[in-house]
Length: 73
Image (spheres, rainbow, N blue to C red):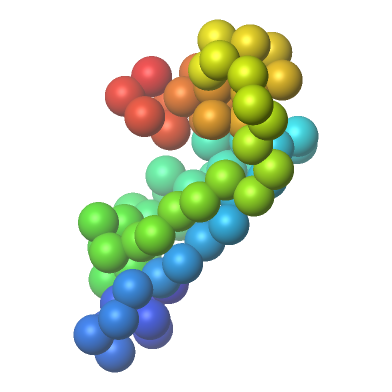
């Protein structure tokens, strides 16, 4: 991420659900503090396996990230 941002670009990340949600919620904040050049405002983040359900639904990947703290939660 830091290399992509430093080269004047954008870092693209595709997120799936499952155990990745908890791992990123646990590990990503510390990793970003350790690597401030990664600048998450320059990231393009997309959900790779989002289901067609409301965010509140237990099968929603986007909802799982919101609950884990990914968007103001």
